[in-house]
Image 1 (cartoon, helix red, strand yellow):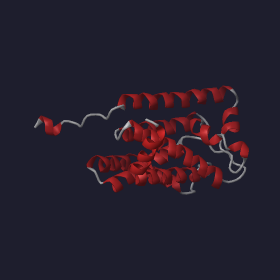
Image 2 (cartoon, one colour):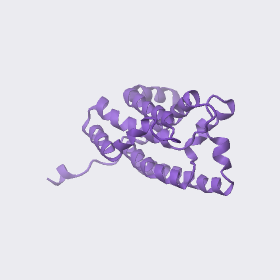
Image 3 (tube, rainbow, N blue to C red):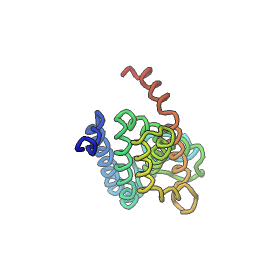
Image 4 (cartoon, one colour):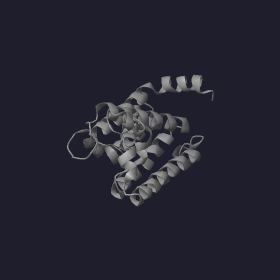
Amino acid sequence: MTSLLSLPPLPEGFRQGIALLTYGLLLIWALAVVDLLTGRRLWHHLGIQPRRLAGLPGIFVAPLLHQDFRHTAANSAPFIILGSFILLQGLEVLGLVTALCWLLSGLGIWLLGRKGTVHLGASGVIFGYLGYLLLRGYFDRSVPAVALAILAGLLYGGTLWGLLPLQRGKSWIGHGAGFLSGVWVARHLEAIQTWWMQNSGW
């Protein structure tokens, strides 16, 4: 009876993944403090500026930057919680989902965002996490994947309103690009992992 109720073992690399998520969050908060002390210069210069060459580096940096402490705090919990859910599927999965949602959401903002605006924040990655978790349950159909999809939906399903242009100052394009990136990764995870194994040398 005890064995039936026991939780499955944590995947290899889970502790390292938790450490990486924690370090990532600490870096986000450290940059928020630096940005405050430098008069908000970081996000003005390193955010994504749609269709400007000067805004391309923001694709790689902007998810680490936030407008203020309130913005940083709002993204902190879902970043850790949803990231931990994905980590239960393996450290490699977390790395691939994060990297692809990070880059694709940023590229979507750069291509489709309103000209003259500056976009920043981890929301694209977070919506990517949510899109991945919700749709991985559908594509995989395994009990753990479905359970994680249901749990993610219960905790953060209400944030899907952020996909609509309802709030001024919210990058709904970044949210949408991140969400669709997560859905794409969920659909093609096995192919992405195969490509990664063949080309990474790991």
